[in-house]
Length: 506
Image (tube, rainbow, N blue to C red; front, side, top):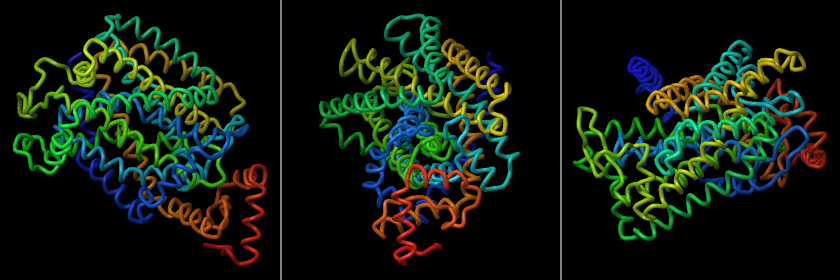
């Protein structure tokens, strides 16, 4: 076990080196500046597009796409991930999680808009994501297959165990239920949903995600209200530690940046390429609409849910901070495992009940994340077999992937927490490496979608996507989508082109 732990830690360290951390930050800054910070300018549009639009025979609604992606984003990273960021990087790590969420919204827009631009209809359902835009945008089917395989390994094998393990640990601590029993029940529920395919996954996410996120945030607000006098102290601690102005946490300043970015991306998935696959499944009239929705989901994940966890932990003092050179910088809870910080924080507020509440929250958080992983795995398999999706290869691979994912849920539930986390974190790092470089190479079409959207809005139109206006090739499905589902918007668009209200070419 020790050798496996060392190997997993080495892999995690390799994919999350300093270069990767700065690359993610730089990509977020780059896209945000080029798009003139849509995460500030277009918040109203984000909310409007979130609640607008309906599902079609081939695509899920904007809200279902948002819910699936948010289900993938809101998981154990929002509870255990935040706790581990504080444990390794101190309170300052929370600020860097906020920053990567703010900047990452720009990366989330680009990848999600690109997923819409080059989505395809496979087996009667829209599919999109990095593999699809790599093939069409970079003209490389081989690289597309490589990313699809990486997604299958990450989302179908490596990552589900993290979610199951987090809930099994919490359930065992709060209710004394054996971890194998928790894993078995969790696996049965997972299998029931994912074997129902994309539509069932979307419906489950749409039902569970809003409820779980709102309930958790309300609890955090109540705890913050009770600890009102500590608000200034908590936020002062976060900012002073983030900028190395707190003598206590000076020893972990570098770790604060690294762990804040690392756990921030693990939680909100911006630039990782997974949320883009949920975005590609949505029914919208223009790629920018789903790009804005997915940018907003990054906000909800980190600025709301992760902040809720951080505030609960810091306001109640239910944390320890380790020193990389040995010992502890802060040890407020001797003997408390980092994975249990949040439960202890809520228990401080509601003795005997709080831990159970967090365990239940983790159940819903982690379950919807596993559902999202199953959807991403399906999308990648659909890409690999898109030229022969009626053949046995596609059918048996989909079946096999769902069996393996279900098995990995059970294995993860009964495995070592550190090994599971290291392998999952390494998988996220590998996907982020690949995808961030790709979306940087596809900056031009990504930016063009937002420019086109804003120009059409300025002309008084409800934007509809016509790839030829942007000089984009390979987006053949959009001709059918516009004529079939958005005929009135297309007529208005053509009229605006004819009378000169809108230029034919950008």
